[in-house]
Image 1 (tube, rainbow, N blue to C red):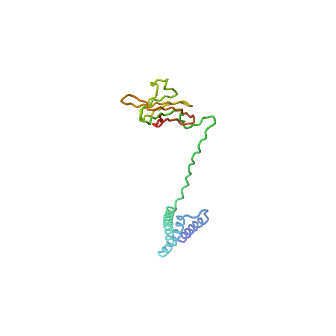
Image 2 (cartoon, helix red, strand yellow):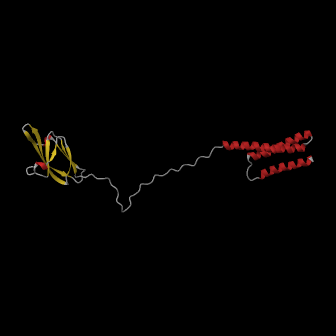
Length: 208
C-alpha cells in the first residue's frame, strides 16, 4: 500500500517537474517555490515517515505541506521584487508650438496706427505782456475784437489749414496812463502736411 502511494507521489512530482521544464514561458518565483517545496517536503516526509513506520504517508503529507509553503514563500518573494522594481520613465511631454503670425488676407485693409492731424497746433505766450494775435488778417483793418487774446504765460489750441499763414501779434502792457503797445510781431509760418502738428511760441525778443 505504502509502496503504491510512494510510487504515485513520485510520478506526480516528476510530472510537475517535467511540465515545468517543457513550458514555453519561464517559471515564476512562486511556481519554482511550489515545485522545490513539494520535492523537499516529500523527501523530508518520507524520511520522517520511515522512522515512524509510515514512509508513504509521511511523503504525501510532506509533499503537500512543502508545495503550499513553497508557493507562499515564492509568492512573497515575487511581490517584493515587483514592488522594488523601478517605475518606467514617464513619456516626454510634447511642447506646444507657438502659432505662426497670421498674414493679412488679400482684399482686406490692414490696421495702421492713428496719424496725428498736422493742422492741429498751439499758440504760446512766453512773455510778461498781453498779446493780440491776428492770423491771416491785417490788424490795421481788422477790429481788435476778432483777435486771439493771450494772457502772460498762456497757451491755446488752434488749427490752421495746410500751407503758409501770416501771423501778426501786438504786445500790450497796462500802465497808470492806460494800455500801451510794447511791440509788434509779423511773420509767415508754414503748416507741413508731413508734420505732426505745429506750435508757435511768442517770446519778448520777437517783438520790435
